Length: 395
Image (cartoon, rainbow, N blue to C red):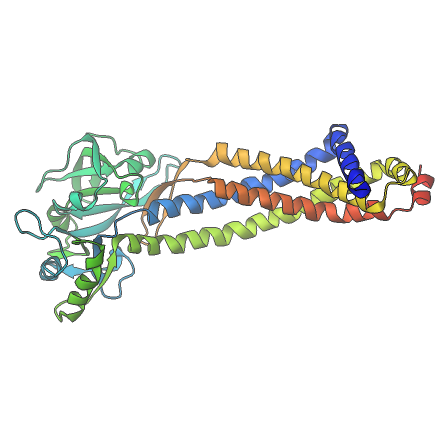
């Protein structure tokens, strides 16, 4: 109990005198805050992208690509193959007994980013009329749907925010063709909001794709029908395809990009953490040196070396905690819900919002505390080991 009382008394004394050392304390706080801000900021990009991409699609909607294709861009299916796929067992049929499926075409067009004024790729997707119903959350928030057979497009809300010239009523030119923007749609912040949609039968001749498509989306009778649907297509020699649930497909698409962002983010945060550790070391060594008389007096009064070391370590942890909270607040205010875009595996821009989650803030705070503990460890040991007589002779 005596040991604990000494620790509490010394900790209170050290923390109370922090305002007397504003310069050295600020160095440690700012360094650690920078580590947490960068850590949370970079990883919030990975979280936001993963939320957007992995949260796209449904378990009861299948997406079918040519065998071996890794993305829609590299896939290719003939008209006959799309009809075989749409008619396979497991596909839900509508009131007219027609399968609820959409054969789609995916091309890349160039637009100008509002934030940088530079060109960037964006997806122009041709869909069949059933393509709307396959995206259950899609709502036309302004204007109307495109009409079949006309050079009209609807634009995703995310794409409209990020790229120049996508306002309702505008005319945009891709290649030799002019398209009129007749509507704006939303889909709960999914990948689809980064795209432009038009009638697939109009897009095919515009890009000289003949009677070919790239993917088929099919509404299944339920998630349990995916196996039946896939098995039927595997047994049919007329098609060689890969089948995914829509949610599974987009989760796989998200994995590569988020892994890359984290691969860059963690080493960057670690490098900055090393610098913050040296800042904390410098701060705590300065604190110990400036309080040499105080420490010597406490030792002479009967305070043990261990309570002095623990109190010094707690002081470093308090500074780290303040820096961690400050860095987390900066990351949240500056980055959370900030809209950005990046290339996905189809080489088109995906618009997403940074997501500074509570889990990420906790991780950042834990990192700050670790930096503080490491930075305060050796100064704490030094404070505990200085002999009383030596410390008093220095004064």
